[in-house]
Length: 501
Image (cartoon, rainbow, N blue to C red; front, side, top):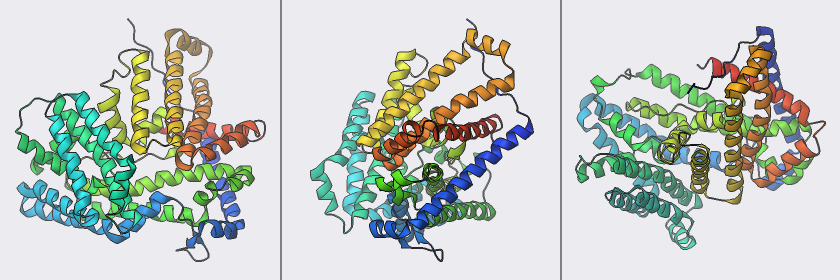
């Protein structure tokens, strides 16, 4: 049986590639400018409805309608930034003077830091989940571990429990911090449980419990990730410093990476000062009257802000993890060069992607047991992500769109990669033309990818209005130029794929 030929991307003439870069960059700037103009023209109305905050930049207000950014910014100023700095100090001190106690010290510090923010009642919820998950894992039955952890995750949506937990705190933000901690912690508990079920029974239960405690309360990853599997965490934490292949990072590394995070934070803040995209997306009237270029700018601004936001949210924890000799997942890749559903999942949140592969997709058969297993594995992976995020109706639509997008892309790739079709294209089209055809198809995939992200970020009403204005009302005026620019985006993305940094 011969292997399927792999499609190779041909280089394009540099003037053509330069044109794609200029059109991609220029379309971003001009659409952002149009959105900025619309934001300033309707600033008074947006301020009355959404209470824009006083801006950090003179002459501008600040759009604080993005809950996640506002939430984590406030908590960073209040306590999280300082506890993360404290983690770095403890880690450095132990690495120099007491390296054999570093993991234990970081575990105790992580538990105390969590207790200081969540309170003893909040931490007791996490401990109860940990003990239950650990106990069920001792039975070494993956189905039982999955059932236990899914039931624990579902307790987040039981209204009587929600009211009890809300009563523990003075503000809604403190309760949400507990929700985020439990949700992210559930991924770690599932990781431990399945690794224990699959692995040999060689370690003592007490030792396993200690490592699970360390893994669950590792402070940089505690509230929001990124996600590292239990197996990787333990192996990397146990590796002696002299055996580590990671070079020793000093002050210059810390200063450089911190400077990059500060730059990303400034970019995110600048975006919500000059473009009120989150407030605009919350009002259907504004979505209906946005000029076409501003409508495109809104879509790009929403997904770009989401990208920059997670550069910040994952950036600082990744620095601290690297200083602890862990290997955190790579930071997200710019969404403007993502031209496929599969690429978006593979390159945006790499920690979650690897987690889904290891614990859901591969154990259920994946791509090695035929089409039906692949469809089932992919559906359950997206279904779990939907449930983990809350299971709301807009998340169900988003998960369904992503599932269909991945299946269509996989089907087209298999069709084009088949010996008969591939040989036809190879005989009748040059390599450069084949790449242009791939970018043409990717433009449609990118359009659907952006639409699904708008549903995820803004809700069903945002996706519905974009679909109506672009593909129904604007099928002859808005959709063609949009697809042309997305074709340029795809060519830039294909070039990055050919020469990843």
